[in-house]
Length: 320
Image 1 (cartoon, one colour):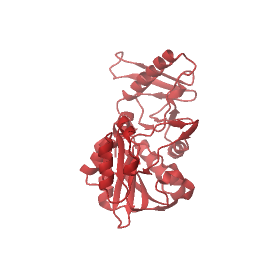
Image 2 (cartoon, rainbow, N blue to C red):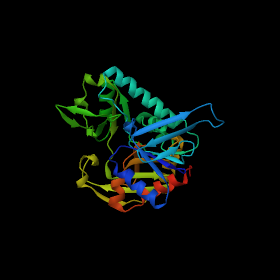
Image 3 (cartoon, rainbow, N blue to C red):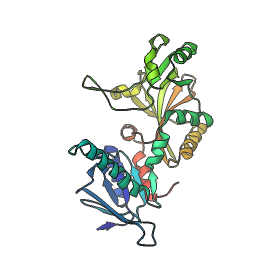
Image 4 (cartoon, rainbow, N blue to C red):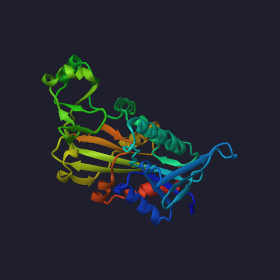
């Protein structure tokens, strides 16, 4: 049976955060069609015709239990989708099939006229570039730590030597990384001028003055709503050990809140997770935007109605 004006939730199979939002949508009797692009085949089929009706497109997306009329989708929650890799095929065939899914299934979804995207994947991709994030933060008047992006070792040494206090190295983009069979990740780490060598020339590196912080703050913006949580720990990078963290609800200065909302507006996003640092003087420093960041654990820790905010936005089906 075809659902009336459903919300599409596009994510991996085990996504507890998506489950929280779907539960809230169910409470509002909003139909949901959940799928993962990696399920293409018997578990996921899509068909769309062009040029046969006055409509711009007429199509259906089917899972094993639900069907969505693509012309009547009210909103798309683009969470943590996985694309198929077709590991059972020869490498060339797998690359070919994977490209057809991305540009076929992905293209049909992008061609839908009218639904609210939270957030559109093309907007997410454009917003994920750290240099562009830093430039926008400065244009909007947010405080940004002194930062250098370079592949010139001499420039890096000069920058580090000229900073009063410590300097951190941060990755420009998280990527899966395995060393000696063990998965590793790129934390924010202190770096000295003596540690910079010629290997820096291989790729751009991000060096940033360390904020003498009193706490970290994660800010989730959902439509016109703002949820800020102070994260207290003794860690330089709080992501290293979630068991060592304490949480309290934070009230941001009005100017900071307005700047963060304008930030998302400039990028064409309706939601995003910001990382800020608060120094000992109480000033807020902008560190990073994750346009599709995790927030479920914060809702559980603080009781903030984050999933309700997402459900309200998706049920409404239009930008606030």
